[in-house]
Length: 182
Image 1 (tube, rainbow, N blue to C red):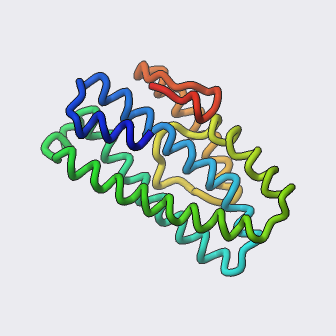
Image 2: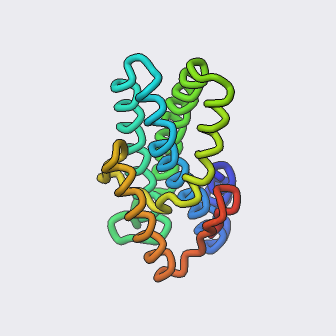
């Protein structure tokens, strides 16, 4: 999704195409990030040594990535405070934050995978896609990301996001992460 959206921005595709591809990436990124916080981080907290540090580092980066997503969303829809920001700057910052988050996630998942048996890994993986499908479609950097408060807030925010998506005419699939479109 990132590369498709980046190509639309880089190649100066039409406004509608750029919005659709970028928004599809933003939706997918928000949902995936939220699902990782809901499914993977509790497992990491339970299984990894130095889990508080590992989870804390991931959550800090998740918040930075969400703030970059907010900036990109504001820029794509022409919010007054971001009109003068060059797309290249917005996209570069988003890409850097997203890559850092992916690196942390890859390391986290690899370390967790080393500590879990195949059945537990499979069960964890099976929970991720449904969690993505019901996660918020927008970034919420100031909301709780872990624990019971994080789980409850994600459910409430996902409902609120669906209302806003409907009001804005934003087309979002609720069938799973591979079906997300805008």
